[in-house]
Image (cartoon, rainbow, N blue to C red; front, side, top):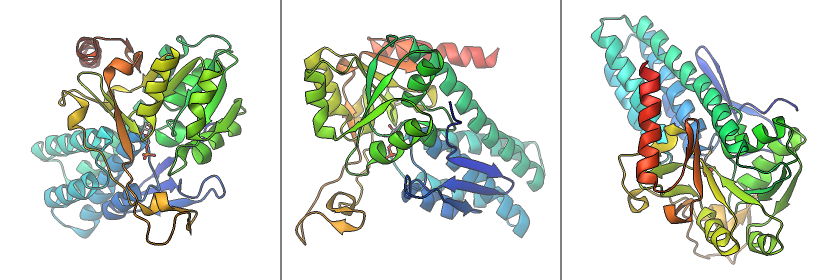
Length: 356
Ligand code: MRU
């Protein structure tokens, strides 16, 4: 298999983001050297996907520390400003807030130990790189657990892009598919195009085709018919935030798929690294759902597809109730209902393991 694509490349003190707005037609990168433009790149979807957003934000904090150090400014206020800019970039993916909290905790710890600005910057850089590398290792573990759920000749449907492009590498939902293929399984993938931003058509197809994994594109409104034809054995999606009761926020259209799966008796799996688990929220009703510009819906490639002056509504995510989720696959194991118990146990076991 060819190497998966890399969304984020770090070199001190500059970050290269593969510009996902331009894939698959062009493979060009954006170079970033400060937190403000990093936040803008996240808002503009140069980089997207929950874990990738978290990793990018972590490096954004390193860039802020480096700039403050070079200009001799006070580090604490500079980091606080960067944290606020990055936190305001996109609201739904909890990995963003998870990574920012880790970075601020580390900065506070280093400051309390009277480390110099240079030492603090280096400490933050080590942590951001560790978050990045750790994400790949965790996706591999998640992928192995998930691959065990798939038959040797499974036809799997996925939505949006939860692949290497959306993470540090390997991917979550696509990581399960990659791991299954690595194990020698003959997996065939149905790829939802994922209106309106077309992450499936543009990004998931690009990743799978680059690696020679068998895949076919369908438009979102075809998935029910393909299921009714008996041509889908499982659906696997990623998530931007999964909460304590097992409700799942993911790309708009995910809920529709889960309802279709229930109708057709098809397992609906969610690939959720523990960094995407938000146990501070009890139910999906409290997950902040990003609303993006209606232009992304009303135009395609800059060309209007609706009458001039048409109004549109563009929620970028939806919430799938836990009762429609067959299992939640994490790097610590596979959780099944009742999720309030199983997710809390997995998080607890993982924490205890990390502390040993
Ligand atoms: O708007 P996007 O492209 O950032 O949405 C991405 C998704 O919905 C993914 O499924 C999710 O972030 C998981 S990525 C491993």
